Image (cartoon, rainbow, N blue to C red):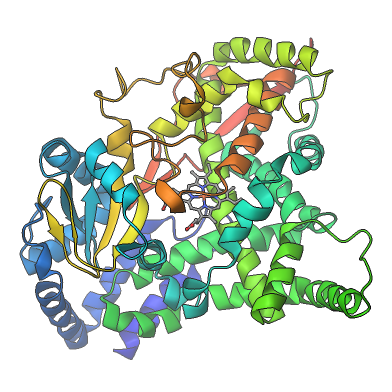
Length: 534
Ligand code: HEM
């Protein structure tokens, strides 16, 4: 047993933690994990049998829910492993068969069934369900194996989440100017201003710009430019992805043991705490002194870290917890926006002529706004840019399923399907976005599809046929921040740069699928050069 687990741990630990070079290599890991199990001889067999029994006895309340693939124990497990490679195909197959009949189907994952909610009617019903019926935190817990990786406290009291809406989204325009300032500076550092074509690794470069811009608001200067801090803040996502992937290969009763061996988050938290722990303590102390002395703290930092510290004091949290919650923010905000933007950048590089209408639009808005793209209203006027990003995200969301929930009590859909408590369910995002009934020629990238539409069809708006940011009361609270950041970035690119692929290729690189995660090509380069007429 130990050998098996240690081999699995080694698979994880041996992975390079440099960005985009780790668990995302699931092929290798999956094979390595299975190889480790097979080589673990009789214990592996015992493990397998226990798993089959678990699987057989576990989700029996789901027999009335139609299945994609086999549902008998051994075959379902094998099919669950297949899901890590073929999620797209399996999800689309289920959608084609069931979206307009039962509106619900299930796909096997290695550790459990995932019930997929499909079709506008059922998605609307899911959206309206209360927290007493379906738990959002329960869903995230299942998705990320969160209680094993992050600890039960983060799952039970995710106090960073309400702050996104209450402090960030509500006051977003207060941050426009510093985001613009940081983004312009990051472009300068990572892309430069050469009139010659410069080749950059697309995803990595976008990630660098997004992480600096976001962190200007999350932690402020100078930390938002500190390479060591930025490396921690981007690598946390890979740590979580890597750890949860391995843990979720196993049934629930084994997860705590596996987690002890493969969880990389504690080490990253330690690294983060060594880096910023003293700063957090200094801020907290100063805030408390000011409070005791009934003094105003002039120049009090107005960033996410400070909000977390203030909120942490109210909850009695340690500085270490505050740093962990900050890392959670980095996790939800950076890769999502960077991947989504890279998808869009690939469309532009494959067809540089698409820049022209966006350029004209930016020019016109600059004229109206006195030359300031960072003004309160400027970015909201960029309808072509908004449509371009929404269309790109429609076709390439960050995940093929969104609205992750866990049933708390029995729920029944109008199609008559009943789901018992304790079941992990999610909505079919990619399949919904590729449904011709919602979008004529749904498979075609039509960048101006939403230009003439009202605000209900803007990048950050949601509806039952556009669920890239989820649905309902737990929909992404950071979507307005992400939309502002990404629109600003695309506006900057079309205004100041020409973009193309090497050799003038017009072929957009293929996405990678890891389970249901959708990742833009990690190695592709794009060429940029400063525009002469800008
Ligand atoms: C293009 C970028 C992004 C995408 C595609 C995205 C997508 C999502 C999705 C699908 C959910 C789950 C919604 C649901 O279950 O109904 C979510 C939740 C969340 N997102 Fe985002 N997100 C993005 C950017 C951001 C940013 C920039 C932030 C923070 C500034 C953020 C903060 C959060 C938080 C805190 C939650 C959890 C909300 C809750 O459970 O109540 N996201 N996001």
